[in-house]
Image 1 (cartoon, rainbow, N blue to C red):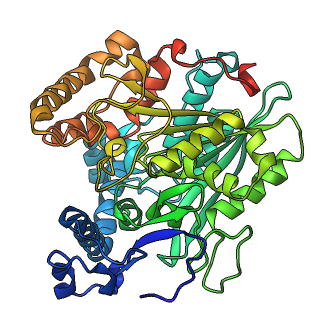
Image 2: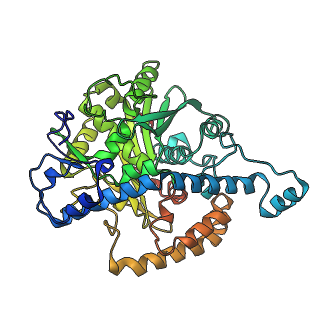
Length: 474
């Protein structure tokens, strides 16, 4: 087994897909003695369950596939995004052909303030909903958090322009962060400050899984886990992305590492928050993220609690996540519910329709991952309700296949009518409509993207947001 120090964890199961050989990969299906497999570092002596070994097999195969497809996937993404922005910059396909004939094509600048990501092209909205005000409390911060989660997918120039020019807020910076296990910068986040009559709120927004980023997808499918004493078992891929230090774990402060070209996310953001919060004792902060970003957002206060960062926990106003996957086991959920309650921190977990990601990893006897806290669930009419768990919690079900496809067809039809029923701000472009059409065979994928979550935060009833015990809701 690997000789790395895992004393911070009472038990663990780590997958190392880089060390797997073809024959070893298949042997795991036929032998329960996984401790002798060098690509599975596990504190358990034996693992008897065939289903569990199948899960390990699937995770490693997926990571190996993503590793092989990293450059082709990135290349495909580059071409798609360049083409979409080429059409936008030149006024559509017709004008593009006209400009092509005239030799006046406007070539997109990937680092420029007009270049949009794949996600940004699906939903080009950048302005906040002016009808939702600060006095709306948690509804306001939900809408702001969702837009911050959406814009986190863009480049630094787009984020800065959006925050300063469209939202009229203070831009505090965009940052790339290191992943010790992937040995590269794979995590991104940005900070802004929303000022309102002295009661300032800092928003920390983590970027979610980028569509063509194999490293981010590898973090998602890596089902490694660590058990922190008194806290519970936590998804290893997400912890690595947040800043888990290789061979060390979660010491109070980062241990110097010559390989790191940029800081680790958790430690750097923690220090930046301390610096900002000391300027005004009325300032609070909110953490948010979509998809993988949502997982990082809810794990951030968990590590704060692990390090007993009382000041930061007391100033944390709320956590807003959108399409967030499961991040830990039942014990972790119980620990988080107790910690959030004790510190008066509100946790809003948004789930729209048949979004596949909140239903992963599976919640069953083999996966052990579970959600915690209440779920704000929205149907295709953007009617929301508070539930303990989203319907069809594990997504894949033969009985629910046709209902999900029918629902996706109704969402596609809605694309042509929503601007008439809800207003021009909700009009869907051709790219999103085509994306919904192509996603009909797998209806949980198109609805995972931010557009429906933006609509849910804007159209959802304010009754879903109960009075807060501190901060802007007071």
